Image 1 (cartoon, rainbow, N blue to C red):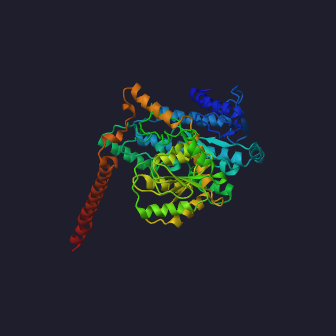
Image 2: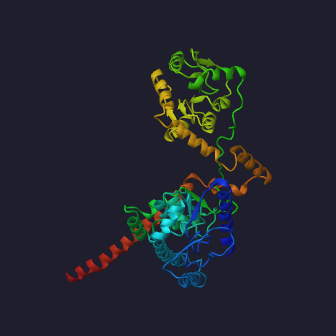
Image 3: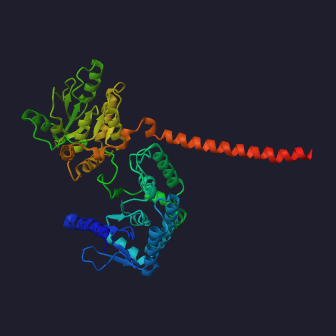
Length: 506
C-alpha cells in the first residue's frame, strides 16, 4: 500500500475510532480508485485497495464490469503517457493529454457507478445499514448520486483538480486569478504581469474548455436513476462539506480565521437581588433588554414606545436603559452573559452589537433586533435570514410593533427558539473554543516572529491588478489588434484580387 493510501487510511481509522466510541455513527466511503484513497465500497477490479488489511475498516466488495487487469493496464498506459510522452513545460500538449485522461476516467467511473446503483442486492444492503454520511472524492464521480438515493449527507475530500474546476464550480471556492495561481499553471503567488496574463489564460481555458468529466452523459445517467431532470453540477453543489487535503505550509495563504464569540462563556450565578427578581417571574420567565453601553440618552418619545410595549408583557423585564414599568426592573449595568444564560430568560431585545449577538447565540436565546448603527444592521439581517431574530426599525417602530415582535418570537407556532438553538449547537460544536483558537494564532505569530508565510499576495497588488483589469485590458487589446490586422489583410486581399480583376476586365 502506498504512503498516500496509508495517510488516508489513518484518517479513516480515526473516524472509525471516534464513531466506535459511543457516537454510533456510520461512514460510507465511495470507491476512489487511483485518487490515492482507501475505500469502504471496493470494486472487484480495485488495484490499490487490499481488503485483507488489518485496519479494522469493513470493506464491501462489489462486482464491476472492468476487470482488475483492465484497470492496471489503464493506469500504466496513462502513467507512461505522462512520464515519457509529455513535457510539463509544453502546456497545451500536457493539458490535451489530461483532457483525454479525465474523459477516459469518467467513462470507467460511470460503469462502476452503474454497477453499484443497478445492483439491487447491494443497494438494499446499503439502505438497511443506515449510514450517517458518505465520504467521497469528487475526482471519482458517482459519489454524489448515493446521497440522493440513501437520503444522507455528503462530505467531499479533495486534494486538487486541474484548474480548481471542481472546487470553484462545485464548492463555490473563491480563487482570484490575480494572486492565486491555478493548478497546473506552474506559477507561484508572486507573479509578474506576464505571469498573471498566463494565469488568466489558464483560468479561461480551464473554466470554458477543460472537461469536468463527460458531463452530458452523467447528467443523462443521473436523471434516469433519480427519475427527474438533474445535472452533475447540481448534485455536486449539494455537498455539505469540502475537506481540502492541503494546508498553509504548502498552499499560498489567505490569512484569516473566524473566532466570533471568543468572549462567550457559561453563565455564572446572578447577584442575590437580581436572582430573586428573575425567580419571581414564574413560568413566564424574563426578557432582557439592552441597547449597549454607548446609548444612554433616548428621546422621551422613543422611551415611552419601548416602556409601553414592555409593560404589556407577562414576562419580567430587565431594562437597560429605559423607564420603569410595573413588570420592569431598571439597571445601569447588567451581567448580560449571565442573564442570557439563565434558564428563565425567554428573549433578548438588542441593538445587534456583536458581543450581545454572540452571547445570545451561545446560550440559545431568540432576539428582537433594533439596529442603530455600524455593523448592527448586518448582524440582525443575518440572524433574521437564519430564523433566529425579528428585525424592527428604530425610528418607525411603535409599541404594538415591539409587542407583536416579542409575541411572535416566543410563540410556539414559530420556530425562532428552534433555529437559535441550532445556531447554538453549531457554535458549541468546535474542536477548539474560539478563545483558544485566537490565543493559538497570537502565540503562533509570537513563536515565529511574525507570519510572513501567511501573508496574502494581494497586499502587493494595486486595485486594478487585484481585479486583473490590466490583464483583461491587455488581452482585449491583443484581440482587438489581431481582429484589426485580420480585417485589414482581408480588405487588402479583396482590393488587390477582386477589384484588381475588375479593373483588368474593364
